[in-house]
Structures are given as C-alpha cells and as structure tokens.
Length: 378
Image (tube, rainbow, N blue to C red; front, side, top):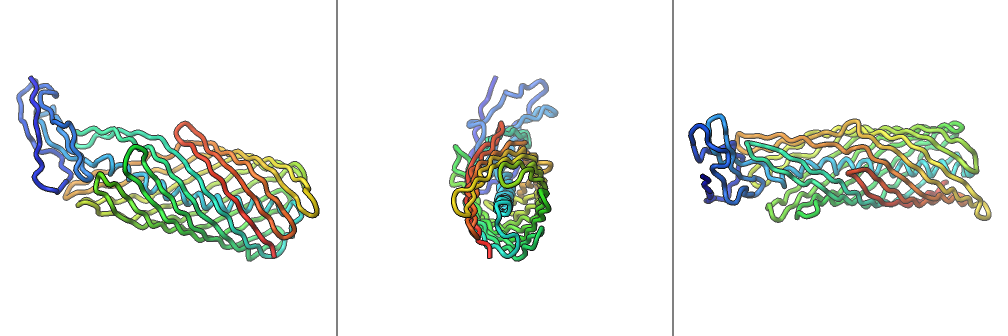
C-alpha cells in the first residue's frame, strides 16, 4: 500500500537535517510506500522532504539547502561580469584613441576622457542536485543589467607609449525571472592602464581593483542580507593594424585574469561562505573599419568587430552550513560566446568622441548594449 505522512513544524528554526527516521520498514519495502504531502516544504533557506534509505529500508525527514540558497552561487559570477564590463570600457577607449591617432590627432600630451555604458545579458541554466536524499531541479536562469560610467586621465603620452589612471562606477541588478529573488550591486573601481603603439602593432595592459556592495533579497524566503566584495585582476591585449588612414583591419587577442571574493553571509540562522572565484577569460577577433573626412579637420572612422570569447576558468562555489552540518556546491562557468560591435569614432581637433553598440550570442548566454565616450587632448 501507500501511506501519506504530514509534518507539523512547531517552531521557526529551519536547519540542515541529514535525516530523522520517521518509518523503519522491513526488507522488500517499496521506495514509494510512504510519502509526504506536500512532497517538499521550504522554510527560509531549507527545503524539507522524505528520503528513502534502501540499505535499511527507512524513510527519513531531511532538510537540504533551498533553491533560493543554491541560486546565490551566481553572486560572485555577477560581480566578475562587472569587472569585465569596466575593463572593456578601457579597451574601447584605447581603440578610440588609436583611431584618433591614425586620423592625425597629436600623439603627445595628456588626455581626459569619460565614457558611459549600459547592457543587459541573459543566461539560461538549470541544475539538479541531490542532498541528503532530496532531489531538487533548480532554475538558475538570470538576467543581469549594468549601467555605469568610466573616466580616465592619460598622464603620459609620448611617441609610442601612453599611460593613465582610470576609475568608475556601475549599478547592476541580477534577477531570476519567475522568482522574487534578486542580487543588486554597487561597483566602484580604480586602475592603471598603458598602451604601446609602434607602426601597426599595439599592446595594451590594464590593472584594476573593484569594490562591491551587494544586496541579496527574496521576499518569499525572508532573505534580506548584505555583503561586501572585491575583484582584482589584469588584462592584456595585442593586435596589429593593417591599413592606414582609409580602410583598416585589426586582428587582436586579449586575456584577462580576475580574482573575485565575496564576504560570507549569515541569514536566517544559517551560514553561506563563498569560494574565491578565479576567472581567466580569453578572446580573439577582428576589427574592420574605414576612416573618411567629413569636413574641415574632422574625420569619422566607422568600424565593425567580432570576437570569440572563452572562459578558461570561472568555477567557484559556496558552502552552506547549519549547526554541525555543511553542504558544498559548485557553480558552472559561462560557456563560449560570440560578441559583435558596431560603432563610429569622430575626431575633430583635440576632441574625439565615439558611440558603439554591441551584442553577445551563444546557446545559453545572450544580450546587448552600448557605450558612448568623449576624449579631450591637451
């Protein structure tokens, strides 16, 4: 036969529970002989269910981390995305500076620049985990937006070498469609960059530190907690410009190494400690453009670019603890994706401006956005 059990929770404390034996049965007992109604119950960040132990034919009440807790694996991933966003802003600025230099802008002197950007990206992911005999299929699809500004001062520009300082801010919301759960970031960054140009060859380097204020929220789970975090890393780019003041082609490669750390949180009587996330992202692509005079000393450079992006690393996890019990989880890094850009750089005297749209596409990761910047040489 089949017997349905009901559980009456008599207090508000939800804890990890490897298993409380509710039924001890004899040999040959079916795994469906007893069940709970409802099959699973979530309280806070714990999901309770009935697990069958075939070794001793027992049915045990177990408590495992809830889907809301498992989705917090995406918190460090969202922070690393913001590091790459502001690093890409510096790369776009250096590309605009190359266009202006080839269009006849002075190679020497300082430069003050400002850039604004925004994007929205969607990642699809579903995972299935079994903890203490409880199996959960968790939808971890998310949509992350980011809007910010990046500024810089080129304090060295002499011949082939240029260097400067940069800093910026971005606000981002990572939300899970279909669930009342979101992660909000305020990201501040500062760094140093350098560029070397000799003929068509260009080499760029960036070192940058990001600081995050992170708010994690879910009304249904009662989650409302804050954390701080940081990322620090370096990015290098290399390429060659074929062509002169008219049509040009720039094959290029880049590599970025980033380490992200988020402080642990202690919500609803449990402990969640995030692993350090080490990400290594490489890309290879081609940028094609054409520079045209548009009146006076003004020159417009129209370009289109495409990149293939690969995550060499990016796996991290968290440890969910309650009392003397702890459960580790591992995140799945982003898969390879393609990225396209379309933009124009306009140089007029000492002033250079650009506007650019971009899009990313893969089976499970898509999005798009844009950026605009202005630079004044002195």
